[in-house]
Image 1: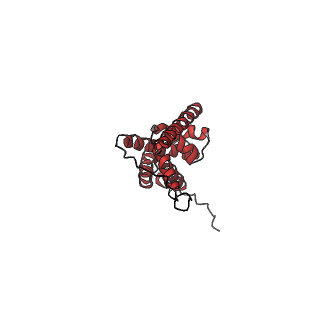
Image 2: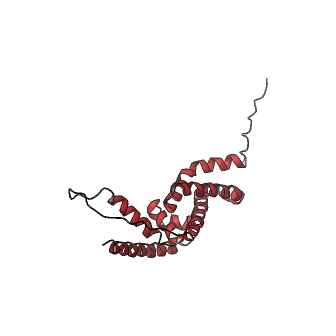
Image 3: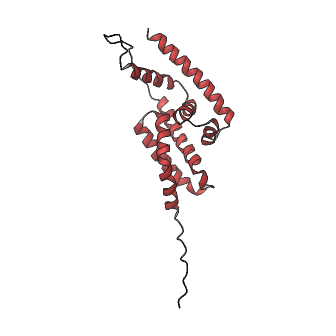
Amino acid sequence: MLATRTIPRPVTSRAEAFSALTDRHLDGAYRLAAVVLDDALEAEDAVHDAAIAAWRSFPQLRDPARFDAWFSRIVVNQCRDRLRARRRRPVVALITGRDHGQDGMPDPSERVATRDALGRAFSVLDPEEQIVVAMRFGRDLTVDDIAERMGIPSGTVKSRLHHSLGRLRTALAIAEGSDD
């Protein structure tokens, strides 16, 4: 009678391990980049570049269970680089109106105008501040999660949030005053 042997499971290759991990996290990485960059195409490029950087650094990942935080940090760094490059390009401000229709009801475009005003105010922030605000309010991450993903202390995250929100309020108030 033949003895049955258990065939050992083949060892997963580096490429298969990386693919399995990134497949689970690409959607979240894209949402994070889209919130931070406020541009779908640029977010796709940032996640693509982050995936390439992660592939190159994958051998240095010590704990695969921490892949999400590690990969998010790489995505944040890519977004930070793009935000810094964006600040070197001139920005053209759009003029928005707050007209009401003939029936006295608010114009449906007011929502778009509000979003545009927020976008312009958001551009006043430094890249580090934009990232923290986007992660907190766009991804609804906790202060500790943001700190881990950015590789900074929680107190720094709190400080950046506090100062960023104050700068946003000021920028919105100035924009509101200049619309009159």
